[in-house]
Image (cartoon, rainbow over all chains, first blue to last red; front, side, top):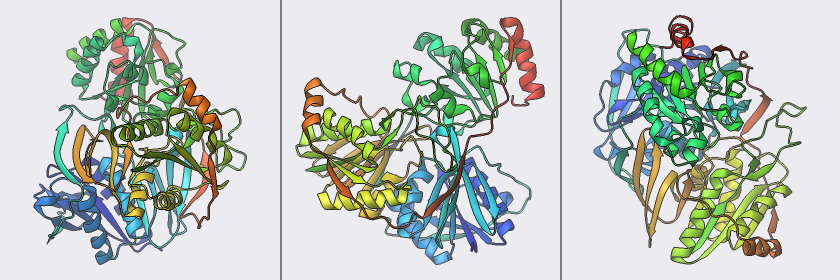
Length: 320
Length: 248
C-alpha cells in the first residue's frame, strides 16, 4: 500500500535540476493514480525559485536549510533526509538517477530498511503497486521489478520522463533550519570540467569515434555540437586512444544516454556502444563504411566520409 | 592494513544478450564471462594502496562457482587472497551488500574497493549500500584517490565536473574508469595464482527485497535508413531533423 510519496529535489549551486522536475511530474502522476499524497523535499542553503515545483505538480515542499548543505555530501545529506522521511511519514521515495541520486538513495534504503530499484525508465501501476521497468546490460535487456516491504525507493533515469508544467500554482515552501550537519565527508571543491553540457543530461549529443582519426579532428564535432546546443560524446575507441576524456564516453563502460537526438560521427557501432545509446529517440549516423552496424539503428544515415559531411552539415545549419 | 576488493563476474561487454526460457534472466550459453571492467580499476587501486602503505589485499566475490575465474584473475594481478561467498541464487544489490558487509567485518578491513557498477544489472549502488550497512564512510565514482594515514582525499565524477571530497577511514570507495590503468597479470602472477587456494564459504540469504517479474528485449528499433552517400544528402538530413523528427 502506497500512501505518501516523497520526491527528493536536487539542487546544484542553488539551482533546481531539470531531472528533478521530471521526477516531480512523474511522482505526481503516480500519486494521483494511487490516490496517494505527494510531497517534495529539497536540501541546500539559499535556493532560487523553489516554488516552481508547484507548477510541475507538487504543492507541499520542505526546504531543509543550512550553509553546510550548500554542496552535496553523502554524510551530510543522508542523515538529514532520513530523519525528514521518518518525520513526514512517506513510504515511497523518488529520486532522479543522477550522480547525487545514485550516491544518496542507497544510504536511505539502509537507514529506512527500504527496498530499492534504480534507473527506471517506465513506471506502471498494477493492483495498487508500482511496477518499474529498467534497462540492464546497458540496455541490451529490460527487467520489470516489483519492490517488497513497507518502504520503497525508486530512482528515475533523467531525460526519459517528461517534466510537465501545467499550472501557475506556486508551491508552499516550508523552511526547516537544521544544525549539526555531519561532515565526515566534506566537499572542498567542485571542479568544472568545462562549461559544456554533460552527455548524461543533454537533449542532443554529437559523438565522435575512431573514424575521426585523431583528437584534433574533434574540433568539428565541438563546432557542430555548439551549433545544436548539444553535448559532445565519444566512443570507447576514441577514449581509450586518449583523444577524449573518460567522462565523454558513451556505451556500456561509459554512460548510457537517451537524448532526443544522437549524432554518431565516425563510429562503426560496436555492440557495447550501441547498448549505451540505442534508446535515443532519433539517431543520425555519419560513417564512410555503409556496412557499419551503426546504420542498422540509425534513423537517418549518410554513408560518406565524416570529413566531407560534418563541414557540409555545419554550413547547412548556419544557413538556417 | 587489510584491504578488501570486491569482484563481480559478468558477461563481456561485446556479448549479445539473449533471454532465458523462463523470461527472468539471460541465457548464459555462448557468453564469455569476465571480471567486471570497473572492478579492474578497483583491483589496481587496492594493489597501489598496498604498495604505498603496506598491508594485505583480499578479493571477495559473491556468486556461483564460475566466479572463481575472476578471483583467479585478481590473484594473478597480485591480490594476496581470494574468497568466494558461494550461492547459486540471483542476488539483488541489497542482498549482495549484506553478504559483502558481513565478510568485510569478518576480515576486519578498513578500506573496501569495488567497481562503481557491475555491467550486468548496472545498479551502481552496491558500494554505497555496503558502506551504509557497515557504517563506513563512502565515496562513489572515484577518478582520483589519495590516502595519507587516516586522511582520504578523492575526486568523484559528477555531471559536468568533479567533486573533491575529503573523508577518513574506514571507507568504501567505488572506482570509475580513469582512476588508473589496470596492470596486466604477469606470467609469474598467473603461475602463482594457479597454485593459490580460493577460500569458499556458503552463505545464508534472507529474502530478496526486489522481485524481477520478467526480462525482455528492448523494443526493436525501426531498421535504419541511409539517406545518401555524399554531401548532397546534407540538406535533406537537416530537413528531416527539423520537419519529420522535430529535434532541432
